[in-house]
Image (cartoon, rainbow, N blue to C red; front, top):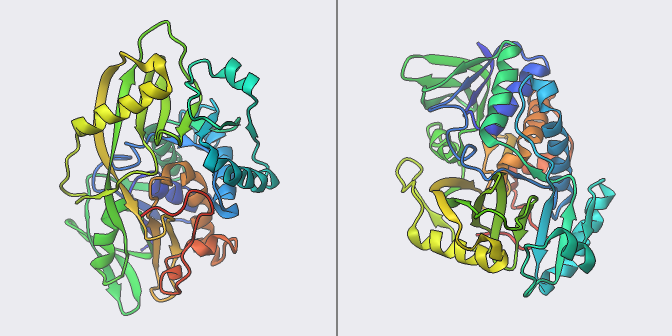
Length: 386
């Protein structure tokens, strides 16, 4: 009998498993259908920021950054976190909303500043200012290596005696009445006091195997990697360019991940069968947008272009924690494109909830129970996506 079985070795599942062991759970197992960080986590652009419109998500983002910073000391393995900073580049109609966000964030200790024209000219010589009303600077933001960060949690978990089974698909949940009592693989049946469903877009199929509703979409998400030409001014911080609907994150040297941000069209896909290479139309569009905003990217060389997926809930907030009507079962999916940056704090809070029966009151709002209660979570800035 396991204390907990965590299905899925993305960053959320790995973080939950580690924090369960760190808090005293005796027998914990991670089961993964493929390899560590082989799904949406590994394909993440892995930007790390604290600019959210709710106190809950801002608090969790801040806690996650604290944990990214000490990952090597806590887990015995570095996650590749870089505190390179984070810029938002916005049009005029977003300024007042962002000011309200920043006021809330400052109450929680997040340091975000509006840059002066002189500061923009000095720090952002690569920026085309056409249509730019404001640029913010989040000094504690940055990025991490999504695979290394997840591997670090698995490493820490194994150091504490945790068990990991890779290349082991879970075929179904085992249910007895109103309780989930374990999982079934091709090899055996495994009993557990808790089963954590952290399988990303595959979570819906796993939940359905035990007649558990889990309304989530799987949407295809594309990214590109470019190498800029030498001897040109280039950005170092992570960029969210709301005017052009793109994000830009430096990988190393002159190489950058460039993708599309909100608002954009979201296309549903089958996570078992979808096109994993990026569309040529997308590649052309994203570089046109990037070259317009940062002329130094003109003539950049395409290094890679790929597609993965987001697991998206109806209100674009994750499903996390137990449910009142199914015992022994815990949701941990629906990151909706934001899951990586919250992985450390999601894992910490979910583990606390499972082991003690309680968690911070605001975190309870992330339970799936908000759906039947008709209490979806919302955003006050930018609007919910859908």
